[in-house]
Image (cartoon, rainbow, N blue to C red; front, side, top):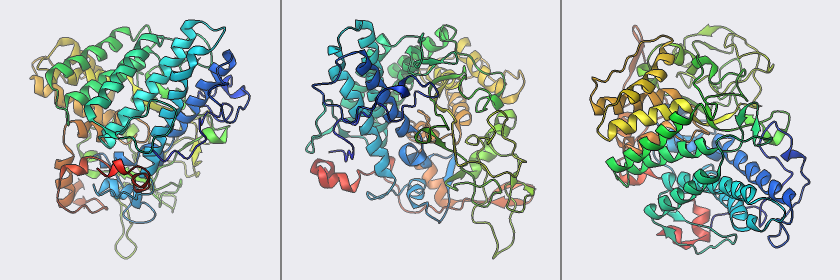
Length: 533
């Protein structure tokens, strides 16, 4: 079935766990291959199984070629027109081939997490001399990550094989989208019941925040899953928007119990100051640059920038143009870019052919990290940046939950004081002032669209690890087709008085709904003929 190039149980307990800078799990003995019959013989085995699960989770979330290339379909982000970026370009062009060399990683990494989660779900109950609460908690964490992975699969490929055991079935049939969502919700319900609001010991808790997934993280994810089920392709509508609002509201009402709050300044959201103690992160994956398998790729800047960069992605111009001015925009994009001559320029600066820059586009500034972890990144500093570091993967933030709540309320046909109030919390911080832009005089549709847009601006460009990327928002609202047609036209946009720029990556062809999904990887279709159906 799923091209799982890993040991039979894949659980290498001493390898990497990204439960973080905390070292407890990392100090476990290395078990190598873990035979099911002999494992879970003591509490150490139970901890090691979670160590291994988080090791796999952290790997699956740590880089764009493992988790984020399909997010290039969003209207916030684009890539390079040449170089070695073809795997990214295909997503940006809505023309992904079944032999896309990076797409296979998206598929494979999800099933690796599922495999590790299944090992715990199916076997942890026999661990002796531990409390039932400890067993239930371990299984709840595993159920969450299995749900998380199947949600990724169903929103990226649609129908997929479902694996609940530990054997690889290369003839597993495709399951319906409806049945996969049922499994996701079932797993999340178990996680919601048995995950605590706050963990009280390391390595599950560190620096006052949950390291492992907690109850509020589960509820937040459930809210977004309901949002997606309400939209395309299931189109379950109002009743599911109400469910989404209910779960988001629970997170909002319980935020203080979970020690969650919005940071006062948007510039702090991705700062090193709060990197491993961010009270806004409802669900995060934490990395440690002192352990090489645990470092996260950074500096996704343009090739011709002085600080160095991968050149994988850049901002789309129309999205940048429509992004409201203020502290949030200033912290999202480089205010100025430094080119190889060490001078600062507006991003739209270009020279005449034949020396024109290959990519002239806004550049995201969220995935940068100074070499000195005690300071914050300074875009005017020409010092080359490290290619990897320990930026926390912010899977879900509280500001997103505010946006989901307001959108779900609006799409269910209502405007409430609470929905408007929490959305204003997001926008006031973005503006750096108490503007209270949104009011209860808005229509329900206006509230929903305002929340949808605020969410897009909150998470713009932070594509490789977020649960709810801009592309996924567009998917559930069936807005990829509209953006596809816009990108085909690729009009010039006035980015400064008398200065016009357009996207570097061309888009062509005719739309059909198959473009909403990735194709199944060719190598897996060879292994499982059922994927060809």
